[in-house]
Amino acid sequence: MCQVDEEGISLLEKKPSFGASSRDCMKCGDRAVVIARIKDAFCRSCFLTYFVHRFRATFGKAKVIRDGDKVLLAFSGGQCSSAMVSLVKRGLDQSTHKKLRFTPALIYIDEGVVTGQSKEERATTCQKISDIMKETGFPWYIASLEEALEIPAQNSSPDTCQAGSSFHSNQDPNTDELAGKLEGLCLETEHTQRCRDLLASAKSLTAKQDLVSNLRNRLLVHKARQLGYHKVAVGDSGTRLSSGILANLAKGRGASIPVAMAFADDRWSDVTILRPMREFTTKEIVMYNALFNVDSLFQPTLATMAGDYASIDTLTETFINELQTNFPSTVSTVFRTGEKMCTAGSDDPDAVRRCSMCKSALDTSVGISSALSATRFSLHISRKEGSSTNENSCKATKPDDATCTDSSSEQCCGQGDGSCHSNQMKSVSAESLSKTLCYGCQVTVRDMKDLNLLPSYIVEESAKIERRSRMRDEIKDFLLCEES
Ligand SMILES: [Zn+2]
Ligand SMILES: [Zn+2]
Image (tube, rainbow, N blue to C red; front, top):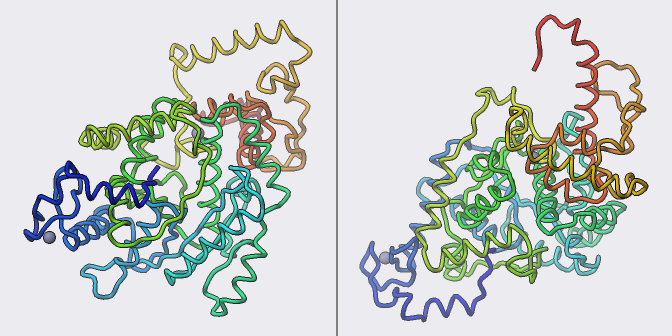
């Protein structure tokens, strides 16, 4: 996480071991105030030039943004996204050399439901955030995390350019009216309790954190579509991405590392996630915010006060933060190594089958003598043993036992293309889910007590794929060419 309080910053500046006070700026020779990267000493103004240049260069190098593109900036109020918004503002400034040429807007996703905040607490936070967002002068929007549960499965006409019900923008010149609207922001809907149940159903903090980040990403993409944006910029710093690499490896999500840390994440065909802060360490970002008075708002998350060993994410985060303190160059080694990773697979991105939860390429079609098959086999055996000792509890406590779910009772309306919804699966089995989820997401889902609480975009999609594969099985003898 990127929270270092003001006191921490002043300590850093005063600490003799920090070294900047006794050194000169490497650019102009003035007295240095910060040390960026590992040993580059800068004065205040040269640090700003370096920082803004590096931010712009990240966009320039990737060449994914064209002049006039609309980019939605995901703003959480934290240090990293606050710095990102401030840098975009500087980059768009007319006087800037080589200015940024896109049209930004801000979106804030209220995650109060995750930490069990009351409606009033969430409203207060939204008010504070909206005040910060108003000051930027960009259009802004607020959504609540539980809206992610309403997202339909893909291909069910998501591309409407209409703002959602809980969206408010400062394009409206009347700010008083806007404030009234913000109070009307619906922070307690029927989905709020469902979202709480979903999180309560996940047994480990790792699974909970995975679910929250999945809901957040899905909602960002969904809202971008609704608002007519095709690019979403997030504030992930290099430090956070480095700990993400290690966490993803530990969770069996190695295959998704290349897209999860790339500047342009193209898992969704119509919306690209951008990570313009990836070239900065969290420490550099905190220094930038402190030196140039960038406001940020600390908000508790699931991991707050949870302890270093509470989840895989907290553990890798602690590890990377300690590396950053004691061996700063090692963090960039982790980052650059992650950058070089690639997955073997089809060159045609449209031909790749994607996980219905995280949208990364499915990594589960491997040979019979693979580690994955071995894991599945031992899981199958251990479940069998578990269920034979307690047969009656099979349905209630082991919804993921494939033998407990009778999928043949499901009937189709006969539409034929697999898109019928007339008799949707009322309950979802782990077996059908496992066909549509990557290994990492299967591990997350395995940690859940009730699979039916999963968001509809996962459940519906897996039901659809299940129907299609069953249909393909039925007609396979009549197909002219073998489809994979
Ligand atoms: Zn200087
Ligand atoms: Zn997945």
